[in-house]
Image 1 (cartoon, rainbow, N blue to C red):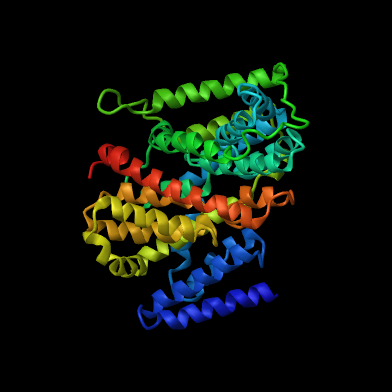
Image 2: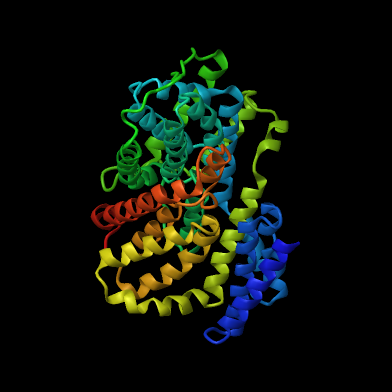
Amino acid sequence: MIKILTAVIVATGLYFLSTAFFEPVQSRLIGVVAFLVVLWSNEGLPLGAVSLMPLILFPVLGIVDLKTVTPNYSKPIIFLFIGGFFLALAMQKTKLHAVISAKLLSVFPNTPRGIIYSLAITSAVLSSFLSNTTVTLMLMPIAMFLTENKKLMVRFLIATAYGASIGGIFTPIGTPPNMILMGFLEDIDMKAPAFLEWMMLTAPVVIGMLIIIPYLLSFGVRDEKLEGAVKEKGKPLSKEQKNLSFILIALVVILLLNAPIKPIYSGLGLNEKLLLLGFGLLMFLFKFLKWEDTKEMPYEIVFLFGAGFSIASAFIKTGLASALAGYFQYFGNFEMFVILILIALFVSFSTEITSNTALTSIALPVFYEFSKTSEINPEIILFTATIAASYAFMLPIATPPNAIIMSSRVIKVKEMAKIGFLVNLIGVVLVSLVAIFFWRGYFGN
């Protein structure tokens, strides 16, 4: 009850403070969003329950009507997530993800630096397609089993969590902020990148982080002894795992053929949302899944997407996004690289203390309005903000992977914050550099 009361007090305080700067309906929206963000952060109510509240609060408080809110909970992009999650469930049920993990781990040298790289890269690869929460939970026991040296164990665990966050941006389904951006681009009638196109755009960031961060984590432990170190041995694929592998390979091939290569090849023109959902449903046709298995599906995340889309939509419809963007106009005369650095810094450090999904939902419409007057292509700004939202490495509450490895009781918050602060800065600079030298050329200025 105290957590709910805290949310009410924060929301009420922000509402009255904002009335001096915004219109009444915009102040009410600020109050409601503050209420939701606090409840998401302090877990005063279940995630799914909080995520359904815009359906009631927005119409009751006269922010937007029910007919405007409800479509946000059934956007086409949500069904891409559902199809992707069916595939992820099949991988988990057949234990194909464990086989992939073991094979990846066996590729690297049996040294502290080699193991740090192997854990980070394995976590990143799996988190591109599976929930980063699931991947971290799966790899954490392996990371702790690989050594009895506590100093090494800390670095192994951090590599696992950071790898999950780094890899989550690699695909549209890797992390919720990516999905929020895809839905937002549809809302503003801007073409969202195809699946493979997204991977091409984010690859430089992911590869750069996977080269730099494990190297950084290995400093000070390269000469540590691998007491009790064990390498996971890969097992041969079972018939079921082979069959699932063939289906996943077929999906990748179709996605590759469907991806346009401008201006040479226009792609197959298939709807990737239907494609992912269709392949997800094949998991039932080929008996990899039973309907009972969908009890494991995180329906609360579907509601969270709906809430995120609803917040973004309300920000635009009430004019709050434009009003907030007006306060950013002072930065409009800065150099593009400085603007992108400031955006990435703001988002990266803000998401340390709040839900990155909620923050992305709030930030995207604001930065979109800002882009209209800053003479910067909106896609560059929106991509920068979205990727930065996933790159919060300092605090346990910043991301689920951080919280999970803290549950091991091996890592201290002070230690994570010290390393994470530097990693945040590296992520901000790298994302901004990629935006300037790659996304700028791809999207146009």
